[in-house]
Length: 260
Image 1 (cartoon, rainbow, N blue to C red):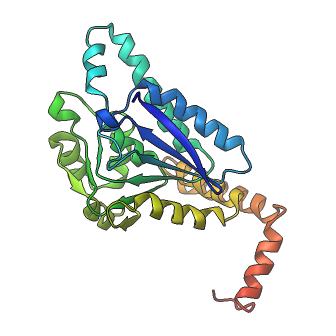
Image 2 (image 1 turned 90 degrees about the horizontal axis):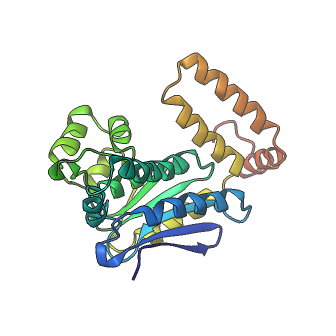
Image 3 (image 1 turned 90 degrees about the vertical axis):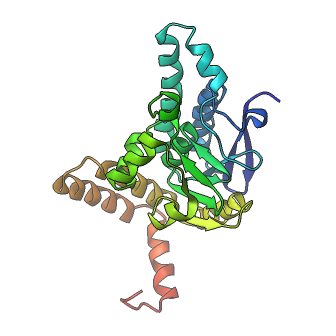
């Protein structure tokens, strides 16, 4: 079966499935443009409130297709530059997508597969899932934003161990460290991810988009810059058409108590 990014709908959630079973869902250029296009469609659709990225079968993705990498060695360097930029375009599209993106991880999430999961807003993982950046073992360095994500998510020494030694970390360890949001029984990651998106889909889309944008801005902002951004988002959301009804419903639910 050829590599493909499969798209299905579960209510208001679009599920994108990495499908390359004979290569353990190895990632190649077949996925990049398809991923960017799928997010573009989801962004413009009022019927899609969130996205889940999952792997076909019992694992998420082992990362780059090694056969493709070997073939690239026989091409000019510009060939791999174009392929890498394709992956990076998908990672940037996930990060800038205004709706929540959840990675549902089973089995292995390695190298570019791990980077893809790290680009998502949430990671839901089966307890037996394993995460690794083994590129160094192959004489390669990380891509897909993995160094950027791990430098922000983990202590420097642990990020160094993953990036330089290729040390695998289990889902439970990464859950303790705050990288994995939710753990579940093996085989239940997609089900748990869809349960999470049901909660997210019930939230105001404009408020979720603001939260995601503010989180992205905060990583490089000074406090005064971020306070100004928060002010602007807060005022705009306060005057959004649906906010008055949401505040009234919350007050009624809480009995107008000042303490939630």
